[in-house]
Image (cartoon, rainbow, N blue to C red; front, side, top):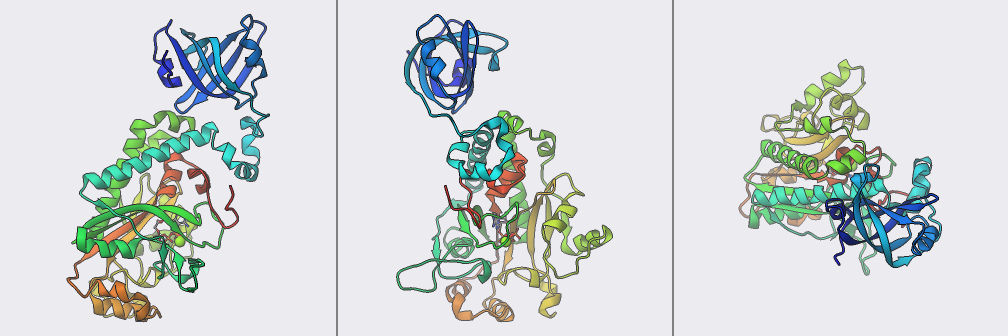
Length: 437
Ligand code: ATP
Ligand code: MG
């Protein structure tokens, strides 16, 4: 006798005898039979226990989330989810669970409670669907980069320099040293690796001590980062839009059931195709000002500005040419701005903003390749050259124009799934208050 998944069982002809196993999702008792909806990794199948068989004694005792293995016969019934059910003849194994502490119907009521019992809530249909989409998102990212000749590399988590500024660094106790942190981004290491492999990528956690609680910040998030030799800002635009399109297409192909369970509006995702509209920072500021938002040239865009801007577009957009003062020191300035003072210069940087109000999912751009220019920018930012010694070194021995970007995978999942909060895009979210379970 073969063990089959719920999905396989639904595809078998009537009369086949099979073994299925899983957890009790729902149960209804009638005079003549007991219906149990059994869930497993692939979905849900209805089990029917006729009251006259001794096994129905067991079925009667099953609480929600109890686990069992049964043998039975596949039979069509239009009323069953998926159009088939299994008429149980034998219970081969079971475990009667204690009363399950989550009622999925009432679940939305208290999201703090659901975070407390996250280790159990990940069994919910919602989390099941999200986790399967997330699986496909990671698969598609690897698939894209590998098909384009990027090498996958792995960078350290313990680091001793800040990529994104000192304010969000997590310091760790590292023997007797005082200068060791959790990485905010693998970027500097990827930049070093292009001198060996030219095009590299990595998918790894990044850590940021984000002081504010928002719907789109975690303290530990998954970062897909790429760096390319012989490339500039336009290449970042092309690669990031191809990557995002590839991921969205693959999810639409493989995860329709999950997206519909999440009630995702598929039409919005179907609109995603390259090239994404390109909006300069200068244009964005005038657009925002004409919409009545009071933002001055030089400021970084916050969530409110991004939301207002993306409302004008149906697809993700590239927002490029941020002021130098709004971006980290390693961004290359526009060549024509080079003689201007720092606060008037623009950078060859680009962010991808997701539509429907989701905002920034990618940040990237061209890096400074000239060692003198890099030193000048480090000084202008009030940073110490000696803190970036090995990073400057990269420019001394065969420097090349290069560019790269970082994609927040959790934010991508959040947008693709249409979630209200980033913490639902991964199983065990970490934020300013939560490191358990
Ligand atoms: P934001 O302004 O939204 O904080 P950022 O400019 O700090 O983002 P980058 O340093 O450019 O972000 O990081 C690249 C990408 O990593 C971002 O576009 C985003 O998708 C993701 N990301 C950054 N910080 C976080 C975070 N705290 N939680 C989740 N994702 C993040
Ligand atoms: Mg940030």
